[in-house]
Image 1: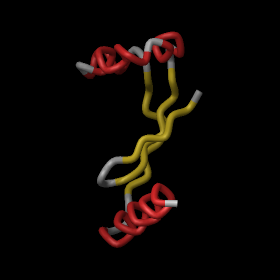
Image 2 (image 1 turned 60 degrees about the horizontal axis):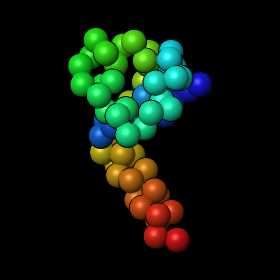
Image 3 (image 1 turned 180 degrees about the vertical axis):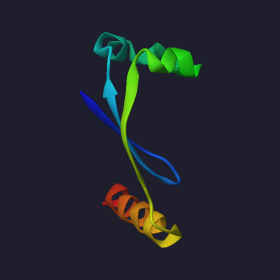
Length: 69
């Protein structure tokens, strides 16, 4: 399974290494308390950096419009 994560500087695609850990959503945050724990669950496959602030803002506005509809 792949997971798309957006940051303020770009998009990251992670491969999930241990899907069983994702089943316990109430305590999932505990698995990401440290980078060592997170590395056991996900692995960074690709990072796409925004070219500039305008591109980052355009994506934010587009998602905001979808939430309002």
